[in-house]
Image (cartoon, rainbow, N blue to C red; front, side):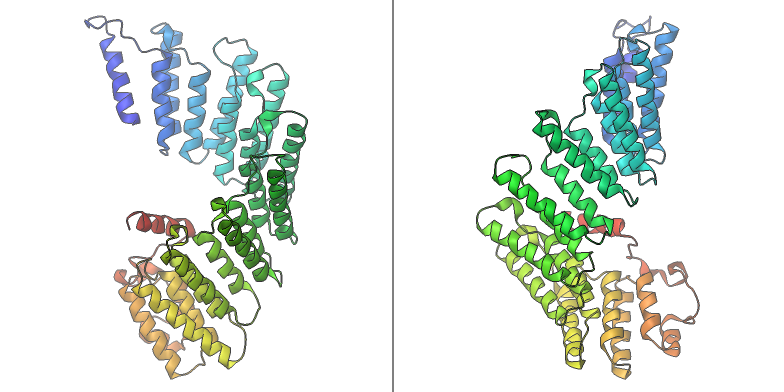
Amino acid sequence: RPDLANALLTRMEELDSPTSIFHGIRPDVRSYTKVMNAIARSGRPDAGHTAKKMLDSMENLYFSGLNVKAKPNSFTYTALIEAYSNSGAPGSAKRAADICQLMIQKWQNNDPDVRPTSRNFNAAINAYAKSGEYDAAQQAERLFEQMIQVFEAGNDECKPNTFNYNSVINALANSEHEDSVHRARELLERMETKYKAGDEAVKPTTVSYNTVIDAYAKSGLEDAAEKAEDILRHMEEIYESGENTDAKPNVRSFNSVINAYAKSGREDAAVKAESVLIQMEELCKAGDDGVRPDTHSFSTVINAWARSKNSGKAERAQNLFREMKRLYEAGNESVRPNVVAYNAVLNACAFTNGDVTESNRAVEIGHLILRDLEQSPFGKPDQITYGTFLKVCTHQMADCDARDKVVEVLFKKCCKDGQVGIMVIQQLKQVLKSDHYLRLIGRSREEHISLEELPRNWWCNVVEGKRQRRKRRFDEEAGK
């Protein structure tokens, strides 16, 4: 609680006045640093700014001679860097990096109280990894190499460790630069080489390997899925042989490989993704509870089928969903169905390829899934649900009065639920004729409209953007 900590610090300063009977209870560098640590842990957007003001105050007290015990030290500067890093505020990564540079200067100038450490470098590197800035990965690498230089210049507290390597790999995994995944792989291989040479401080862990697998999944490279699976198999090998018992594959390892296949565009992507899921189930049955499939595992495989060109994919998606529900009802809480899983099945229905019989079956499955979600305790239809079901109507139903009636009924439900989002509007334009669209929306189909121009009760529950939808699902599940 940074506000309470700051209030106590302020009270200490007040009690230290010459007229107070408590004169002598003077805050020192530890007092100020503890408050700055509380500020850093708060994660508030203004954490870096607030901590910087406190550091400026400490320096003023010290250099003015009012409080020589308030001189900032390594822990103080590290707290400031972590405050910037945890705040997520725009520009905070550069400010964290600037404080690292200041610490290096003070150390080089023989300030006895300031010495850079791998911890403060790690906080600055993490700030870049989370920043989303275009050059974040390059800046993270630059800081990492600078830390190595400081170590080689005689500062043992800057010796690179596993956390530092993992942070840089994470920054590279989040980067959109084409060669980032290759640089992440090279860093992992450097860790392995150093560890095999006896450097225990840089022993690769499950996190190290998972982050590189994830980098491949995000990369869009043609052979990304195979590379991701190669790393998974390597993890299994070095763990089972005892070469590295800290590299045991977990659920995320397998899920990231499934995701890599789902995004790969390969003809056999869905089959490959499902084979990884089957392996997870087999390992779990054999007693490895650490790779028990979860909701994300099943949803990603269902999405792989949705993206495939295979026939019968709506059936495959529905069967996977049924298995997911069966496992949950049998007591496996980790596979609790959610709206994302329902929407993934609807997506498979929407993009089914085949004859009239298969299209009709896709529509039937879509209806069953939508009705099941409406009646389920797992959530309620959102704008993605309604928008995707409209895609089912567009792609799988003939253009006729029956389709128009289904669309109209669905739209009225969507309005009632307050889920008329941008996707719903876009799909209505695809599926309806101009006169029918005008009658439902009250605007021309050719006209661009924003949600704010529609009745508020139509869109009051819409959450645009993946991050916001994820937060809402988390809040709903936390309150279930």
